[in-house]
Length: 248
Image 1: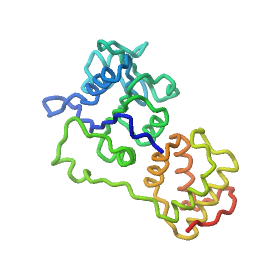
Image 2: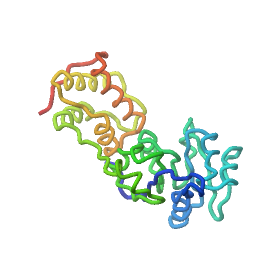
Image 3: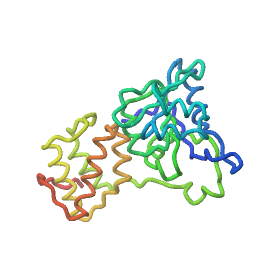
């Protein structure tokens, strides 16, 4: 099961010019404070690319963002060293509590599997990370604009249909959820279960499936492979598979 003992917060990115009512990311200050509280000497800001991290002027400060653009992609915020890490092949470089810039559910699923000491997620908008929010219930911090957020404030991730839940759990029972991908036998069994569900008109909601796998502690990359497979029957595709019975 997914760990609930890691401190987690999230906020919406309102880092726009101050004359437009914007504010710096509260998650950044929280990250530094949490590192001190946990006795950590390093923190990580995780972005899609280093160029992406260099666009954080209004979020963390101009000088700090400039340090993210160039080697060694780090700076000191006494007594903490802040590291900038790109998602492209650099997961092993994470140090200490992690702030995910412009987070997505897929990235957070991958991060959760690595169990950093604390996680802060900054979302582009309220519906950017609904699964992670639904599974872990992180604390909301930072600027809020109720009049603009009201329409999206009650986003809820659906639960898997009970038959889909039982059938898929049976199909993935022996899958090593920490691997990066399914082997041939695992893939054929999962596809067989998905095709059986589709033939019986049992819905498999992608968000609900992602939430279930994230809650079960699956590797993010492996979970995304299963979610991608779940989309194929509806597209009329029938990949190689083994017949699998519905579980009712």
